[in-house]
Image 1: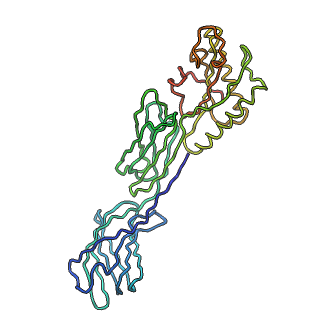
Image 2: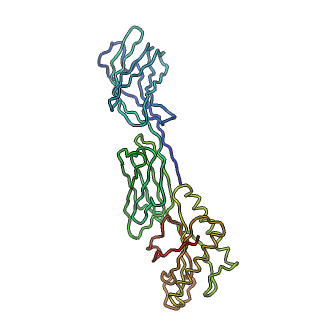
Length: 350
């Protein structure tokens, strides 16, 4: 889910100007000098701001940018107390300017007053992320940005709602389109459920996204007849609520990272283990097909685990209804084996 958040600071930075050579009657404070140092590209401009306490006949700025470019700026007459904004013609990027300010008030000339300031022009980067870029198994995410990359902030949240990791990684203005990989560490028993990512370009404009990567869908288990896998009409009501939950989670991640549904089937310890695996597989597939027929338009996978993952430990041959169950998990990748899924032999239902 895109959570595109735009941060724009139109700060006016007041600078202290010290005259190198100037007439005593006119001081730097008389000029009311400031700089709007940050601008959103295409919509705003960085500006020098003058609001003098005395009338000015003209002003001139002789500036040298950090990359050596010469920038000459100026204004005509300004009334005392009036505000004058002089646009700084800068492309995207971050540059320090060293300037000398000259001018005239009435018959009195003033300057040079030296001034140094930093100007930032940029725009929030678009974030490009593909399903294979979210590697929950190896604990890394790769993104590409439409703007040069300054840094990425990443928060990883576990399936119990607790933070797993917070990572900040800088990229030294990597060119647009560069694969940017951020890795994190987590414990073997931790499962990543969602992540929040913010990507910054050099002028500190940023964009963000938040995506679910693992969601265990709560539900009431369907009861099947002995050794059968058809869903009885009387049991279909138990699938309506989880279908709504699944649809709701999918809406949350729309446009971000594609997510898929995994259905696992389980049995009690009555019968032979091999037969129970086959029975649980068929029952999981029946649930998968029901969801598909109801319009769930995402890849659906199923697998049977038989009596291999008991919810309630029992002796062999025990008829325990709590072990005859299914799990519904939305995930960006096959669910990790340490959370009730001992194997990864997933089959595609649709």
